[in-house]
Length: 242
Image (cartoon, rainbow, N blue to C red; front, side):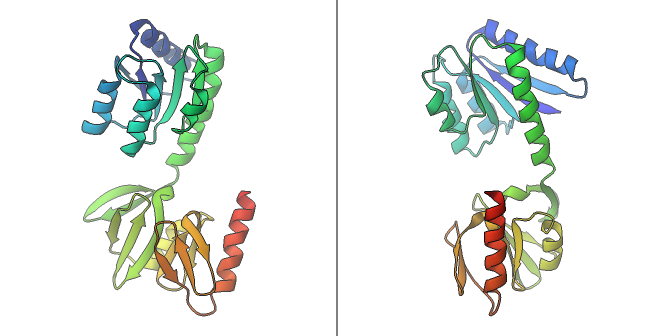
């Protein structure tokens, strides 16, 4: 199931967009949308901020009376919302600005199914790929789902593992650093650093023979003899990415 939000101040446009999504479901019966329609920007912001509403995709008009769609998306991003946003608009005027808030697409009305459906294909494929990149971890007595991309590094401290996330949060895990690494080793951006750390190379700003610098400012000192191997993994990862 996918949560989809449509935000437009014109009821006719809301209905039209929702109908296209229902037609997409008919074309691809394995797809199931839970669609919520919002007639103004404040309703959407309230749902995300106060009701923990986390849509996978938001289709949003750029021109709305209270706030421009780009302003709304900027607010959502500041809340940590990572929904894929498709802007629907009558003008190309704000196209460049739209992508500054990490918009997935910018479509000029009238939008047809021929245009929308391939975009939905790609976004849903991306969402499925991301959904596969989660760990189920027991944190403070509860099983929680943590996105692999949100993990910056893990540090062993005695019998507890300290998992540091990209949003600044820290989770305590009662497991071993070896078990953590076994879960993460399938992803090529994670490497073991000595006996105490597992590090996400995506969040390493720099490294030298003594230390590596994380993008949150943390320095991790390297065990003797580990620099050459780590350097090869670091450059190998980024060369392959490029």
